[in-house]
Length: 59
Image 1 (cartoon, one colour):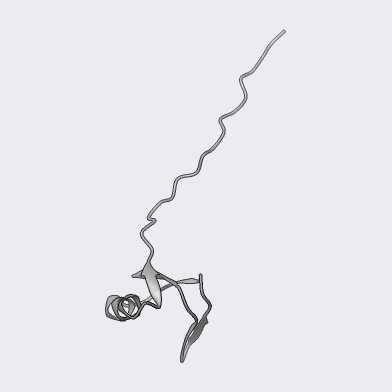
Image 2: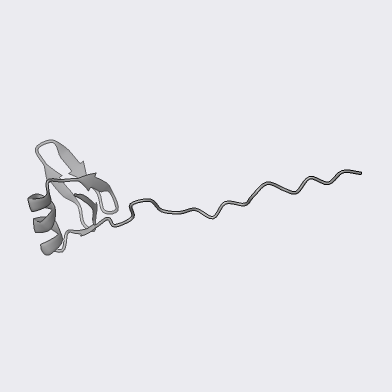
């Protein structure tokens, strides 16, 4: 489960700053969310506003 940290958190193999995202096993992610240290990341495929190509003008 991917989460976004709200506070700093360190473990044996990582150091995370607020705002960083990381995947954790679901049970560990739920504990961090319940403790108020993280929030779940729900963006599966964020969409971007993309400007289309300019129309071709021939003279």
